[in-house]
Every structure is written in structure tokens, then in C-alpha cells.
Amino acid sequence: MSETETPTDIASLEPNPDVEVAAFTGDYPIIIKGLTNRFGKVAVHENLDLKVRRGEILGVVGGSGTGKSVLMRSIIGLQIPDEGTIEVLGHEITGEHADEVVGIRNRWGVLFQGGALFSTLTVGENVQVPLKQFYPELSPRLLDEIAIYKTILSGLPPEAAAKYPSELSGGMKKRAGLARALALDPELLFLDEPTAGLDPIGAARFDELLRELTDTLGLTVFLITHDLDTLHAICDRVAVLADGKVIAVGTIAELLRSDHPWIQEYFNGPRGRVAQAARPLQSAGLVPQGNAASERAAPAGPAAKPLDKTAQGEA
Image 1: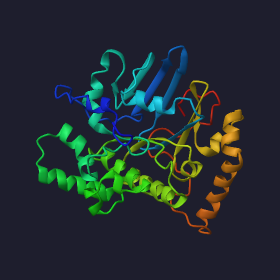
Image 2: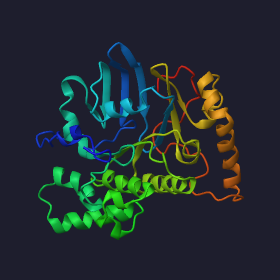
Image 3: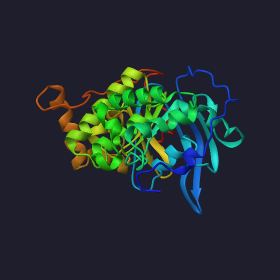
Image 4: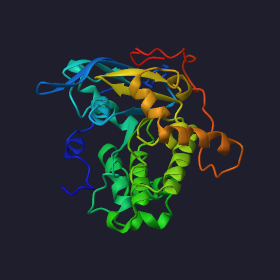
């Protein structure tokens, strides 16, 4: 498999028509309790708790090796945790209920690092992969129409649907991957470092697109990123991973009041101060904005409580 292809374990799962899935109406589409992931004797997560609010963009940050991607893989059923429970859209996907992940998998979309496109398929054919898997009765003509629509929705021109990944720039590959993630009209969107490797202008435009899609389509977004500009521009809250747990979760303003060393170094370090300084200037229109400038309140769920340094992932 080439470096641009999707991990094969995704394709190995088959839809289960016998699993009945009711519409989710709760405040927390993702609830994680007591999650523990071990690799040999090394515990990446230890008794980790987290709740993701419906309709928010949750940024997930942490140092290298803190298990951000492992956490995302656990939520979408690609990593079986050693302990704990994970509920997604009201369905427990761990333990004896693990088969239900197949029944709800068409309700989320995933953008892996680098786009994870199949290198031998065009953009349009990549978008059609989940459509063919979950809706094999769709006609070729309808599949083509949907693929072009999703390509345009991701910010690419319609002619990009006929291009191969090798013919795309880095930013275009990310948008093509986003188009595939949106193919099934998901309720949840998972993104792993979507702006990594993009120039500042391209990253800002991607952020703007993600914010617009979230508001327009009513998405709930789980966003792993190291991009401080992205955190300031579009994230409603930020969850911080350290010491095997979510040590704090809240708005950036709340996190700035934390005295945890890593949080202070991350958000109040030289780059963090630059990102903070840019927000008032962008709000005042003194520098190009490129994406949402102000912190937003979460559109659903209870109001945020004051930050708890020992937060178990719930605000």
C-alpha cells in the first residue's frame, strides 16, 4: 500500500443491515470513560475521560507520544482499548457492543494525516469508495454526480474530480480527503493534523472552510492539531492530553488561566503569544483574517464551567 492509501482495516469492515440506528438527539455525541490503551508495558492512555459537545469543533492537543491519534482511532473503532468505554452517537462501541461500530460507521467521516487517498484512484473515485460500500445500489451516474458535488463542497473545482492524487498539491490532497470524509453526509468529522504541511494562507483557508462547513452542515468536529492559529481561529474548546489523560478542557481563555507547565509553555510560549496577538488585529480588520476570529460559545450543550486543572475531559 502506498503512503497515500487508506488503512486496509477500514475497508475490511462491512455494513451490517441488521443494526438499527436511531437518530442521536443528546448533547454529547462522544463520551469516553476510563479509557486505557497499552502497547506492551507502555500505557499511552490511563483512565482517560472526555466528553465532546454536539455541534462544536473540539481541538485536541498534546506533546508527541501522548496518544492523540490513538485516541481518535479508539473512537472510530480502529483501536481496541484495554479498558474503559466509548459511546458514539449513543452507541457503546467497546467490549461486547463492538459490532455496533459497523452499524453507525456511515455517520462519521475521517480525514487522516496527508489525506490518505488511494493513489490509483481519481479524486472522484476516492469519494465514491464509501458510497459504494454503504450504498451499492447507487447508479454510476449518481455516484459521479455526488462525487463532483462533494469535490466542490470541499473547495476544489469540479474538474479536480478527474485528477489523481499525484496531480494534486498538498492543499488539494487535504481537500480531496475532506471531500471523501463528507461523502456520506456525516454527523461527526474526525481530522488528524489537517493543516500540517500547508503554507499559512492555505492553512487559513482550510480553517475557514472547516468552520463554514461545521456551521452549515451541523457537524461535530474532533480536530487533532498543533496549529495554534487553527486553535485560536475556529476551535470552540481545546482538550489537552498529557500524562495519559485529558488534563484540561475548555476555551483558550480558560486554558490560559491554568498553571500546568505544559499548557503554559504551549499557549504562552513565543508562538502562542504571536497567535494570541494576531486575534485582536484580525478582529479589528487590521490584518487579513482568513478565518473566524473570535471565540465562539458551543452551539449545543450546557455552558462551559470554569476550567478545572484536573479536568477529566468534561466542561
